[in-house]
Image (cartoon, rainbow, N blue to C red):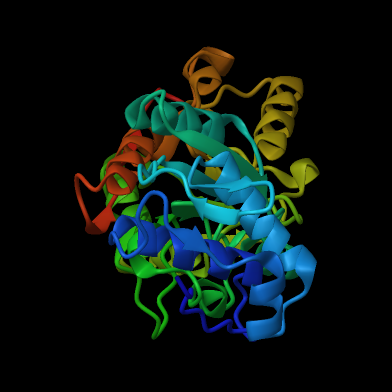
Length: 337
């Protein structure tokens, strides 16, 4: 049988993958049946002006799946029609840290042991983010991506079939629309979270938000906007800084920090000064992790529920739920403010 194939050499999906997918789809649709011959490598190269290596790679992968086989002197034929729809997930994080481990473990647990999950990291580099997606198009059944950027990276998603894509944690507010995402509504989340502790927050002379600026820390612009909105609507004195100056920490002031490194330095400084968080100075950390439950007697946190985020993302991959789902967010008061 002649394989009807129109290679798109402008597609990000490699041509060998395109050829492989055409044959798989024909087998699933019973347009190619067991025992039926398929074109030789030379014939496909001649018909579609393909490099031999392109066809060989496609055929080798089809052999590994048990879809085609070959006989000496008789060419290639369809050997099986059971196309295994194995769940294979491309998971793209910004970087690994404590809360990503929590999210990742919950994702794997909910997904189950049959799925294959490969993890990649973009380290907040837009070019690396785009290249990782480009290099892995067509290789996975699902793509779970954390777009931790304040710039428009939506063009990197357009080659991924919408039903195969799940965005997690950050949902860019852009013209491009995702079909499936579990996300933090950063602006409203921080407003609602801080509102839960407004009675205690009012006792402080000033509220600081430190962005912990570094190439290893993502702070959404919408989170800053939400903080400003909260402070202004409650007539609080506040300031947003890129990084804390620990020599200038003030008593009776409240500090909200994003990075764990600033959290540790904050606690060192207050210990040297003889100040107790929650009494002499206020401290709220962003993103909950188990160590913050016991560190310095307990650190208050503003945080989304990363276990639930992992479970929801896995349920989207399994097709159990769909849509744009805001993740639960709350303030946990452990007495440090």
